[in-house]
Image 1 (cartoon, rainbow, N blue to C red):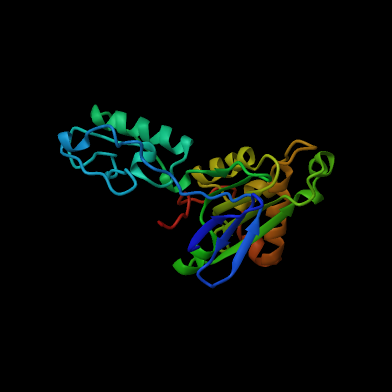
Image 2: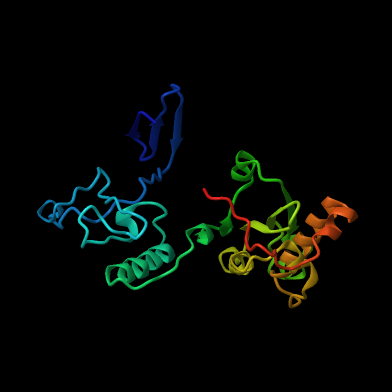
Length: 245
């Protein structure tokens, strides 16, 4: 976008670099998150912030000044309330020398849009780039009784798993309750579970959680009987197979 102008009739016109124009009654724009650090006089503490008010931190959330830690929006991505709380916990523990464990690779991400969108773990693009063999199982809300009851026939849940070991690598959900459903997959991944867990266990009926079982069976069917039979355990002996970002 090059510029925006108010129209005489009360609307708005956006002028694009392609020389196209877009006309509408209103314009909604987003500039992302800014760290609320302008009034903190960081320079007095020996710290510098970037043009978005953010501070650089290491893996323990320690800033360039060893006794100062930072967490949340002021350290940048992902700028989510849930992750910020975890960062604050880890930063506090590290500042007092208390051993702590956190798993950034398993942080769930949620978009509270309509419909909701949520995911945890890896994407197909990431796994393809990393050369990891994977398969996908998909379940649609319209196939599930609960989806029909609540009238959500467009939602879906996707499982991504290692095509040889069956280790769960990623879960992606779009639809009603997506940000709640994602935690089932998060727990299975954290405990080194495989897609077989979902195929072999019973889920309450009628619930959206049934999507996990339907997606698992769909994914295993893609492998064929011989390959699917080799994924015989609900947990991988070596734990979760999650390639680093």
